[in-house]
Length: 323
Image (cartoon, rainbow, N blue to C red; front, side, top):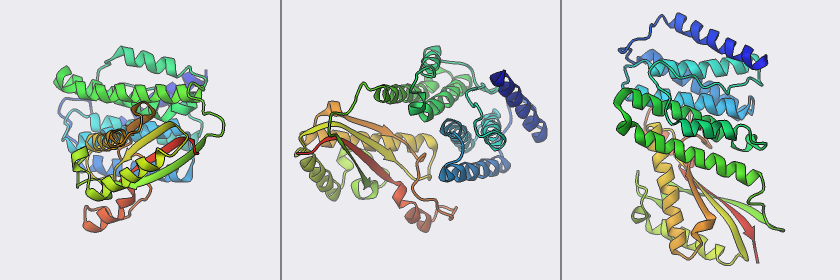
């Protein structure tokens, strides 16, 4: 009954938002400055909730994924109305969290300009949602569901060849979510006396600007990674090394997601070349989703780029036993 009531409320809120906007579904609904202002307003609300630690992480991650979708399509000058629809979905979630912090945001509707694709991944989502350790992968699952809607939009708009890269992002998210569930279930239970250490390396000192290959590692960056590899080879055992790439908020969602993943993978490749085992190193890209600092400057100035520097990083979490 509670889930049914939530679905009804969700549908009513969507109808209200559509009525207030006065926009009917059509194939020519260009994004406007008002759309961008709404996205930025909701992003600020989301960031405030994230920093305050209020609201459930799944719902907040889903709202954030809808806003990333909307913002990217805004800059792509999408004319299908998907910018407004994705923004509305984020607005509904945040509004519901105001009224009911424990709001069930599991419903993932398909807007007008999206079709359902990759039933195999939707079935995987449904199975993972039944996992007893669901909370461990809730954020990844939220991002995966919206990514599948995004893939459906690209398929609806330009065909499967165009949508295929978006589907690959969804596949990666599904893989990462399953890994998180498996880890929580104890399949990778730490050995006795395991220690966990976290390091953070600035990508500004590792890579050339906007580059991500091993070849673009700076000499200083190579020395830092060589020193890390040499230190880790003194450990008695290395059970897991998790590399997570992060970017600042400048640039599109797709570009930042790709850049952060490629940089993490380049570091993995370098560490392996220095003698560490590839099978214990995992690399993922978080894009701009996990900022350390928020900067009030809004325009792309040198001051803003400098302010956002702490967000451009690779975080390294090492699990194992020291000598």
